[in-house]
Image 1 (cartoon, helix red, strand yellow):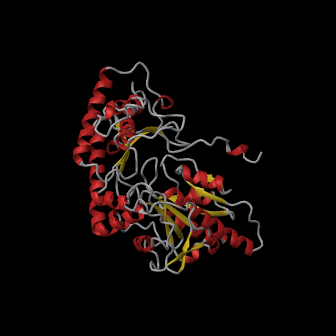
Image 2 (cartoon, rainbow, N blue to C red):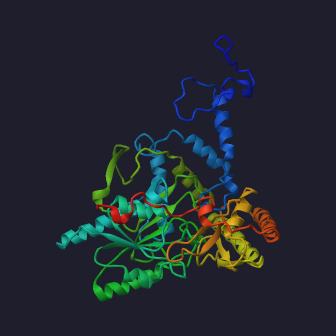
Image 3 (cartoon, one colour):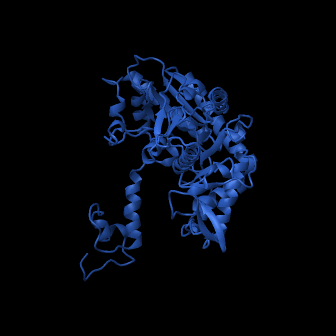
Length: 472
């Protein structure tokens, strides 16, 4: 289009000058565009993304009720940090904290402290900081060195490795054993007087299994009786916090165990909230050191805050409160029971196919609604990565990946069953999987696809500078 012949609102979108030029990629655009043209360019590029509902790798919410979409739109301009400007959003956040304290059986939910976060990773780091400051205060009061804190954990999500590096805490991450979870014996053996906490993962990323919080707590009780070391537990319940209270209510993993001082949860995983929702709750207000709290003006008074992020949208908290009102204990139990039903069905059908050994079958007493499997035959002409590639051609993202040390030679596949994955969708995926296996059996690949050649799907990250070079 020339300057004498500008685009008109009535012009066809794809004959406009905007659509007859390439989208900017490296330089800031000079000219403005019609809203519909800018939208169409962005919309069309996003067609290349996978379909979120068919992404069976993600733990995150991919289906929400229309009311949640509406509340998110209505809250798009609310900055949750401005407590005085948006006091009712702040009030909803406070209510959610106390509701979660009640759900996690805190001794006095009405006075328990906690906060919303952008996700469970930020929540985990806040809990880690609180543990470090509690440990440092105790050591300083006793006249002991405070320069060498550490925390103990099993195979964890990368946020904990980041916590250790960013906040100068030694990460004692134990290798994965044949049972795929950290054992009480391993946890205790790694502890010493500089251990700020044992991080127990309640819903492990790699397999979906729960680590045994109660057994680890008992082992630490025994350690204290023998040595005097009083080491707290932080429960990383990013995936398990919104399933166990409803589907395994007698399982002791939360504040029923006095040694558990803090819990982080992901609202945008099994909490059913939109992406960007996390929570951290402390057992009692004394478990969050006052030195870490900042006060903001709230209705003429002061409201304590403790976050790494400052400005952030309020819609995720508003949507979380909606979900708590909408479902209650009864509704969450129904929703999560349905996901476990689908997980059990998938485990049964996958096991019946022949080539697979089920490592975790979605048992609600032992883990989250997920199914993890490996190939039974180590000499199979194809790998799990080949199977994942075949499923990807139909739009399904069913990840294959290798486990962490010392199980790094083991490749697994995993499905996370989320709210919105119906039995009918599970059948569609199983049908495509059967076709994929038939194709691979009839025409085996010339060479098995390796993990290094497959599309990246990892639960860890490699630091740009190795730990051993830090400070050298």
